[in-house]
Image (cartoon, rainbow, N blue to C red; front, side):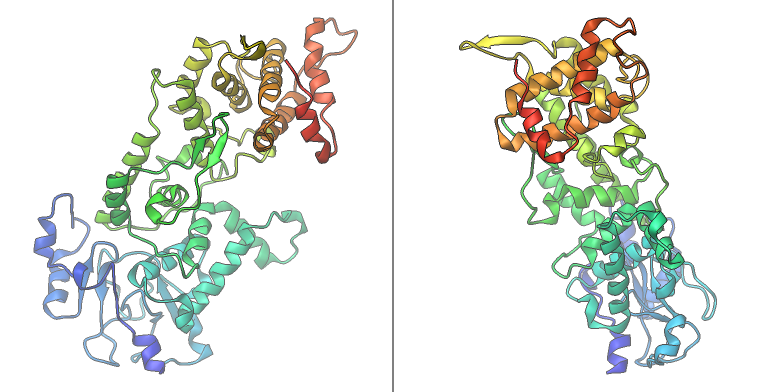
Length: 476
């Protein structure tokens, strides 16, 4: 059984016979490049039956005869023995000599005993390296469970710990154990990797390569995270039943493959680690996915207020840290790249064209003339930092924004489903308006109208259970 555990080479799906292509044929495939692969070496391996080239995994090595090591690197389906000449499991004392593949092999491995950065001992894996190890293993073996073998069980255990820490909001000052503190910091600094790990340790989750996902998205289109309800508030899409329809998963993959292009959605303000390496074919698949995403979220000055509002909510939902956390507003993390993003000028155009606080009479009832533009006006005020459109430095602007928000509450707070969204905006406004440079004081010489801002902030209940009633208290 020991030999079965460690010598299993059944590389299926991604790296199976369908992908064991002749390199000359592969080089002729449009869009495929082998520039970074040592062509002659790979041909030699193919000719001698020692391995093949996978568009996802790179060079895949196999033993020439059972029980004899051809190279210290075999495949992603078993650990690497650095210094042993057979596949027998040596017991717990050998664990420090094990390494797992964290990146595809685009060049042949080093000699036995020479460290190779593409293979890391299990106990030394960082969050980003663990994401790579799990990613390539799961792609190569979609029919295998992580708990089937000792080394993959170890990967599962580490992944489970990181996935759990992702759900915790522990104050780092309260963490006394240095090892745990380091792990928590690693998780928070590498959210895309840990989000991917959370998926990969789920045995029911079957990952697909970038190229496969790009092909699926080319047919179905890049999915959106949210659509709007008739009232104009986010309505999350139902739980995805296929990977092609899971925007969160695709966005996570894009964060790991295109960190520069997706930088505006990294509101952790720290440089997370992306994938260590990808094959040229997978890089091309990632480029196609990114192009599809941009096309899906592309907006122009001809877009309607509702289209722009939906686009803004989709961008906010794509941020690494949940945009509904009000503390992000105060330290300018909420959407730090918003003024430089492609949607910013489109939002400004909507606000300029429409009157956010304008009302109309409908069947004897006062209603907002352009409710989507009104909501955009409030969200824009929350996201902006500095300049004339900064709630902390422009009192008259603050009055208009507070008025717009009150009108939104007056029109939509009767629907219980809208309260959570209005509450998110209220909490954000409280943070921004509490930082105003010149709050109203009775003897301060400010115009009386400005006092409505201070009253608005001062009357927000301290007890969370009373906030719903506060939101429902506003009328036209």
